[in-house]
Image 1 (cartoon, chains in turn orange, yellow):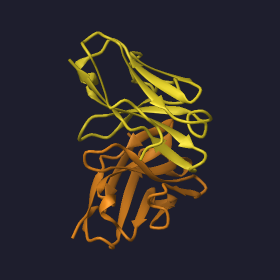
Image 2: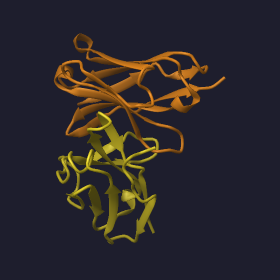
Image 3: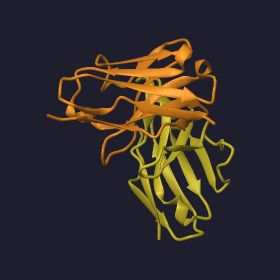
Amino acid sequence: EVQLVESGGGLVQPGGSLRLSCAASGFTFSLFDMHWVRQPTGKGLEWVSGIGKAGETYYAGSVKGRFTLSRENAKSSLYLQMNSLEAGDTAIYYCARGGQGFDAWGRGILVTVSS
Amino acid sequence: QSVLTQPPSASGTPGQRVTISCSGSSSNIGSNSVYWYQHLPGTAPKVLIYRNNQRPSGVPDRFSGSKSGNSASLAISGLRSEDEADYYCAAWDGSLSGHVFGTGTEVTVL
């Protein structure tokens, strides 16, 4: 069974940093693109960042220069380093596999940026 | 804000057909595949349609997708109470070099 489990969320002050992790199981992690998608409270889904099988990364304009996405295939893990966090980054963050669309999702983890 | 525009809401009675539109541009829908997702609050989103009109295994054939030019649509036929959810279209945008989601449509079964 394909599983994606996010961790590392929580409350952080504006300007602070947080590192999200996504542990994958049930599939060959290295063969898939991986992504982060977020949903601010009361708003719609927003793609945040993606990483290809070869490690190439892509970012939404709203996070470019502040967030860094990486993967560790040996550990079947995905990481999102979030720096210079703003109130607008407050959201549930989902880890998603890029297969036939985003075809597997984690349950999501809450990131709250507030003083 | 999103570059893909959807109506904020749609509704129908059980058994009816509901259609949701998704309007984009030549840099996203016009030149790339469209995907549709169903999202129930408190749960993980689920892909309903990939590559414009393909259904993953396990998705009922009541759900169908189509694309024409810079627009796409999702049709739900034989509407059921469990179809009450938020629906999002998505596509790769070549100009932005990133994926984009639609604004989302809340479907209500009356």
